[in-house]
Length: 351
Image (tube, rainbow, N blue to C red; front, side):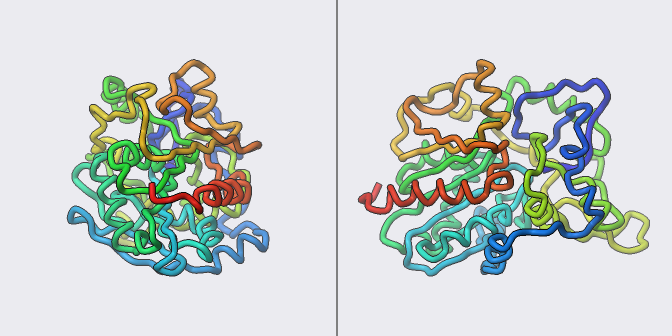
């Protein structure tokens, strides 16, 4: 998710896990998927209402001097699941998925540092994200069910799960990646950051985040990144409303709305030397599965010749009729796929 758009003539990219993109001439349903509702909540099916009615406990866990927002469902003492969201997102991206597992698992969904209601940092790194996940798993009882937790990460969060699985296999029973791809290599970062400076209304270190006068105005600017239609507007609306926070208006006349994520997170992210940059990094001890959308830009990228970052032999499962944000496009298919994978691991011994 990101606010605002594009300079004229900007190149279209196949996939990138930055929150800001510059695609030209996006169709209205991609550019502003919530515009037609004019600030009202779209109608939603009963399964969704039932899921979000199972309100999580909201707590904060401290890690590396930072308070991290965590949502929890289910009883301590059951096997643990840890859900990790994508870039510029937050823990509530899983709030309509996690309740489907609360009867059989102790479930936690964390907001990564710099996102959601979690504290911002002066720098961000894969190593710190991995340590944060471990701290959350320990603090919320995900180890109390007789085995190590299973990590589930989407997009950028899947990248963090992949890094943690590769570097700390002793911390998890297994890992599930959901439509996970990786952004530009280090040598391209400077060029892309310079391109971002040219984009209108993108906050930088010397340019504050845009503040919208009303919730309706903010929701109008919500769109998914990488760009795609929001196949279920009621889910996009649920996510968008929880992506915003109240802040004072610049003229002091009252309060407005702005996005919750650290707008400089990408510039502060230290990615040099990350093992995920190497195609086919070799065997990884942690059991891994990758779930992806059939219409995802990540898959388009790989079909166009981009090498896979995953080890050989990785099991991959396609979700039909889904773009990158599988939990928005095909939430119940994602639930069913996760249940099948978890059932297959339920009888396993300790990994």
